[in-house]
Length: 225
Image 1 (spheres, rainbow, N blue to C red):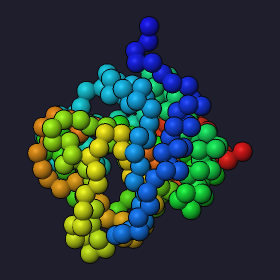
Image 2 (cartoon, rainbow, N blue to C red):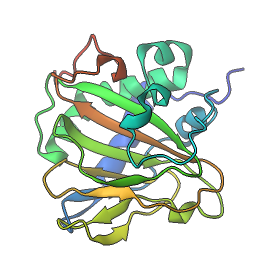
Image 3 (cartoon, rainbow, N blue to C red):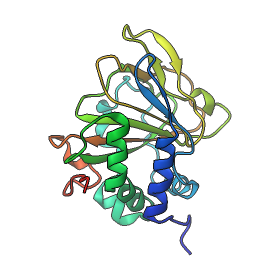
Image 4 (cartoon, rainbow, N blue to C red):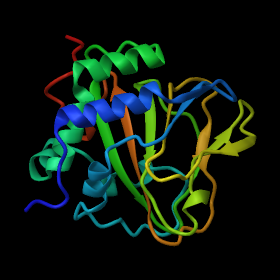
């Protein structure tokens, strides 16, 4: 018996697409969408039971680039080893899902590449206010953490002057999408993490993305047909 059960690609794509279609859009302080029930629960369980230990980094400098060697991207190797990773990647690369993301976000995704990172932040991790680079056609975070303080572990949101204006929900299996732009400031202010802050970042990366080792399938760009 395989545990956890792995849903089919069609059901994962349909579940995710419904979450995107039902997302609540807000234009303050910049355009973004809030989603709920983003992935089937068996996919969530499959991610959380991956035999990948969090990197014990201690206090970090407020960036992820400073510890690139310890980051966990869903690569062809992980897709081959773990069915959950393979099914999720295949679902998010489907033409109908790609068209939905293009229509929702107003972006051109033809020829881009899927990029997925599994993050496991421990106490001492934080992110300074920053904007994602334009090579990410969209940025999506799916929150998969639990625990008594998890409600306080959402992403911090800032206005164009980098003033704190709010925090996204830490609800399990919720998510946020935005298109990187000049005002899309976000981060994670320093605060205690009792446990592990687990989340997935998902992007479609432009065809000229340099770090090919970060891509889920660097040999097959996303196609709409």
